[in-house]
Image (cartoon, rainbow, N blue to C red; front, side):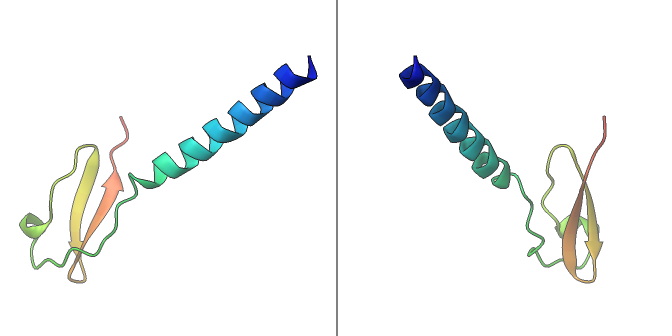
Length: 62
């Protein structure tokens, strides 16, 4: 019985770590230089702005 609980505990920890790391994949870096809005790459579900020479992204709330 305790081995099953330890297995479940380990799986929960592994799942949590996986979810934390996979969420970092979708973070948007604003290191794209731009002069106009059209210089920025488009992303789905994001607003795009060119602010102070770099692309800035914001989430679209549906």
